[in-house]
Length: 375
Image 1: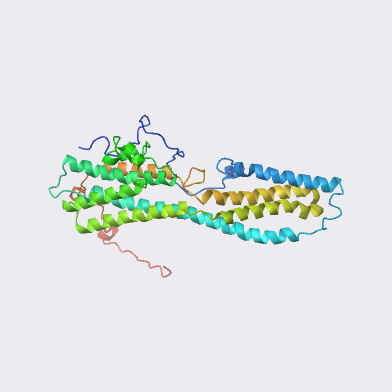
Image 2: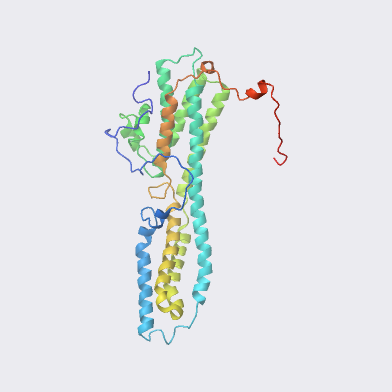
């Protein structure tokens, strides 16, 4: 039957010669409705913006301390500081609010588009896995060992597309990763003997190469009459969907928010925070320090979140859990390939009849039927 490289039943061996890629911790769990308030999130540090904005917030806070001390104990501002003037922060606040909202919405839209694209990818991969494993069969009813290996190899390519796309989006263009290479090595050009020559070729995009081999496999199956024209059309449509999603992956990754926009937002935020103590110190005095601290934490935190999630394909704590996506799909393939290649409804047992007449009807009892008129 299939050789040891054909079926994605287990993860790649951690003792293999392939290098390990950086990975988030993969946690497979069921997601339920959140009960109660997540108090732990109030004091969480890992995965939040606190480490990234701690130094800028501290610098702005120390700046406000300096301004308050000079105002309280010297006459440094007495001659030129306008009393009770908040014109500058009012004007900048309006502009800053618009920019921050636009920045956050744009970044979150890119994040959600990345998630939608991964959803589309797995819809097409699931359709292909079903059509390959269940829909492809010989007219004689039994595939030869060689044909069975080819079918298992095509299933491996489905997992390889997902993992290769993950690595490509992280600028990891190599193929000798432990979660990728084992599922490609049955293809001659990706085998250990040819991996060196593959690395030297420019312009090779592994996920697209995988779709080429999948399309070739579909064409061969049609030529052998293992599938009809309808199944071939469905499979080619799914492959086209993979290419379309991958192209959109590239668009999201390679089209960041323009530097001029993100730079301007940072500059306005800093001008606002630097000017804030001058505008309020005359009215609130020592309360200027906590006010500036809170303002700096909020503005710098929101700006940092936008910068972190605008590219959702990396290794940041808030990026998409692509390692988990791929591992869950591997388990799906494992479950599917553990079943018989050919599923026959003749093997079914007697099903429950959902139209079974209740016992009280068969006994002839009077049953009152109540119709809900508000339904």
